[in-house]
Amino acid sequence: MKIDVVNTIIYCRNWSESVAFYRDELKFEVSFANEWFVEFKLNEAACLSVVDACRAWVGPSSGEGVMVSLRVDNLVDVYLEMESLGLDPTPVEEVWGSEVFSIFDPEGVRLEFWSSIKGNTDDN
Image (cartoon, rainbow, N blue to C red; front, side):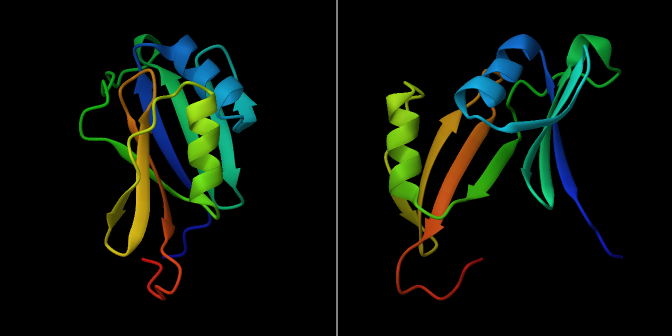
């Protein structure tokens, strides 16, 4: 099996707020949008979409059992940006040889940002 692109889809009770969060605050690039579905391009192989749950047959997750993990080049810069946006990032912690912090979207979905600690050769 060859997978070309991965798309994580979040079914939202707070759809308008979620669209604004990802588009306006996190500045994720919109690759497709209609009146109830917005897809954000994260990179060439990954997307994140938000769906208005009241327009879909799948109910909202309400943030339970969902975490989006995003590896970034410079965790300090991302942390400072999240802090400046008032997104209340958690303290940076060391987990499995990486530095990690999280924020939460309007649905309560945890967005985990992480970078490998310098000198750690295991990027998994």
